[in-house]
View: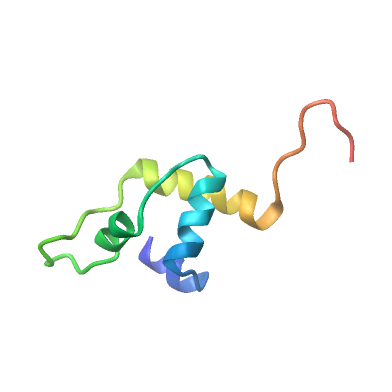
Length: 73
C-alpha cells in the first residue's frame, strides 16, 4: 500500500475518496497507522479488505463507473 501511494502520488484525502468510491469508509487516523514504520507502537498492517476496496475504488477513480447492464456506449 505504501508503494502504491508513492507511485500514484496520493495524499491521505485522495485515498479516502478512492475508498469511498468502493463504498468503504475509513479515517485519516486509521490510514496513518498503516503508513507508519513497522516498529512504531501505533503501526497497523494493511488488511486484505482495505487493499481490495482501495484497488476496486482505484479502478473507478481512473476509468469511471462501470455502465449498467443493458446500457450501450
